Amino acid sequence: MQERTLAIIKPDAVNKCLIGNIIQRIEIAGFDIIDMKMIKMSKEKAKGFYKVHAKKPFYNDLAKFMASGPCVVIVLEGMDVIERYRKLIGATNYKEAAAGTIREAFATSIRHNVVHGSDSKKSADFEINYFFDGLV
Image 1 (tube, rainbow, N blue to C red):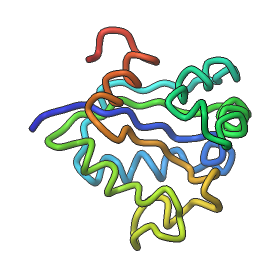
Image 2 (cartoon, helix red, strand yellow; image 1 turned 180 degrees about the horizontal axis):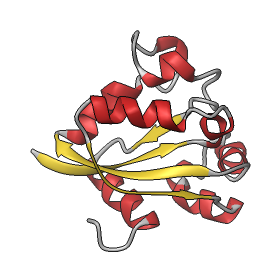
Image 3 (cartoon, helix red, strand yellow; image 1 turned 45 degrees about the vertical axis):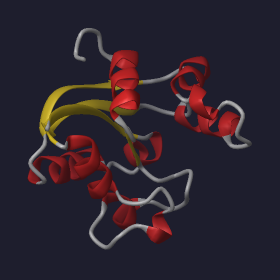
Image 4 (tube, rainbow, N blue to C red; image 1 turned 180 degrees about the vertical axis):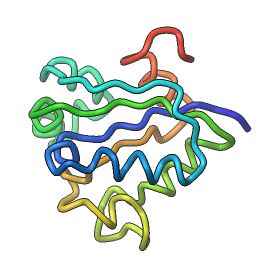
């Protein structure tokens, strides 16, 4: 099924100059990039984005990390894009990520795992609308 998802290249990856490498992997995997921009989130904006994790112990640290530097937000489109992109990026815990995935290649910790991907259609709709108007 044709759908859209949000991808984020996180501050740790931007800081390590991995934007081009990650985008190249996304394009080679056959995803269409519908929109893309570099942003610098405030801690409040990051908290709003990750509000589903508000009661978890890592919430404040995650918001602080996401506000620590620029990141690249990207809208991807394609057949079964949510599931396929999640497979491309690998497990949240980079030590469990499959060989050849983005996190296996570049992540250095569970928090510094270089990319984000929506985990469901509902999440994708919220996340795309959080950064882009009128794309869902």
